[in-house]
Image (tube, rainbow, N blue to C red; front, side):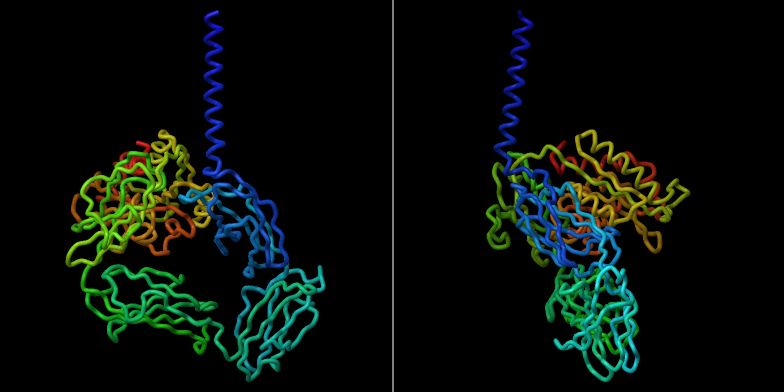
Length: 569
């Protein structure tokens, strides 16, 4: 009888416990990112209508389109479950993937269950076509795709006037030079299927195909803080080469080609208190007459700018009663903060002791010190609440040809970083972290898209460093920019590694650095929360020996920094 009573009590306890859990799930349904699916994707030519299920906790959705190389070719943020998008960049016989991510109010995300994959089969103008017409020379326009399956037509328009229209019969269409010789014109050439426009290309005669350029940063005639300089521009479409030229007064001091419309220029290029001019030259193939230019002038401040502040825990999920500690990586300076979202520069309280949080607050920080420029203002929307299931994407280097100092046992970067990552993975797993790991046979585009799909809380890239002379040594961690939300965890990892590093000299602590769009694995456009650790220099004898002899210690140190940041240990 006693056993029966005990069994009944056990069943009742189980029932009550299950009921409580179910009730909590039901009551918190609006706060949980539930799984969701794409309902349909319909298109007419390159215009698509995407429909997906609603996620009750979603604050917004990101729709991302990848090509067959996992390179993002389109992205937009939307708030509805039906969205129209235009993808004029699609090419014939190429595979694409449409992904949707739901984001909640604190920035956690969930990927759609069923990414939509498709192969574009409509004919398109070849990407190899030149956009420049030459007087007195007939122009051959190359077209990819099967033109026999439908009654395709081609139309040539200039200034809204139809110059020519006829049925498209071959994949090499000849445009007679009589149409454009001795004119300054832009010709719109379009493929039609009935009334539907299939693809479009613009051809230029005696005009530059390159669009106008506007330099966005730095601002003209501004005075910059002495720090790395972010250079960015918009426009310049269709250019095949971008040349960046830096002048100090009238002397050219640096010239380089760039591939992106945003780059970071090291502060080492500049001197305090000097005047500079940056000239951007965009060119199309070898047609010198079709270049576009833009320039900006600025002065470099003679005072150093302080680095921003960081905190000790993940601001998105902070346990009630946690004591927030604010720190900064500068040799001197004081942190001032506010908890109501106001400007800490004018309203801030000096940080002297940990801040105990029991409710959501907007923490804003600034580092100030006389004779220095203030840091940028840091912003930490503290969300009080726990998260039970963290996940991390581990991305050790696959650079097998980066050889280290073999006399101390360092083989190559790929092998050594995977050894260390094994220890990181084991330590994180034993503390309940879900782990995803890159495939060394893949590439950065695959890894970032996979990491994004998994919706991980941290993308952690693990590398070793090298220098032109083999004389540099030390530890550094990369993030995207000073205002990136990863600044805190990057400093946590940096500080933890310096505690076990073989040398305590100041220059070995290379600090947290900013890629400003140059590194895909930390760029928020590709991974919402990523850092890249350069553990040490594999071409420096003592650095290489330290990594080989301390693989487990290094791996556990990095893992423990992550676990402390997420308040797991």
